[in-house]
Length: 73
Image 1 (tube, rainbow, N blue to C red):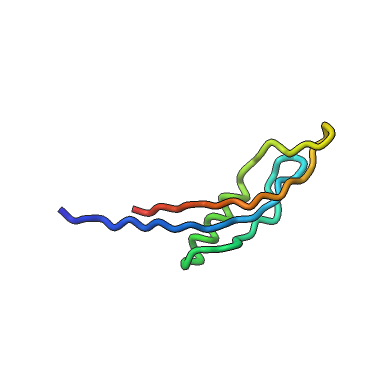
Image 2: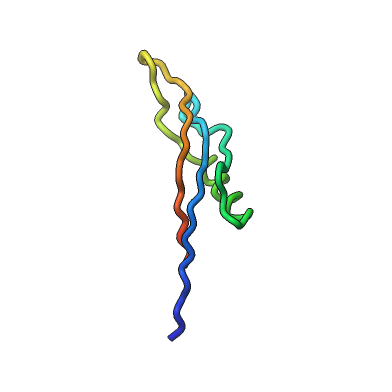
């Protein structure tokens, strides 16, 4: 029985949620040592849809800084 090695890494992504809930300007603030993983994370982040922030009842842009933990087995 071969043991499998688990890889765990953390990166930080910054992005803006637009007034319509879409993600704009995602960037990696602190990436992994693998550019391909960083690229895939950005592609997934771009596909997300959020409830937009509101101020005085009107939708507004909101900046997020988000940690992501990746585990590979």
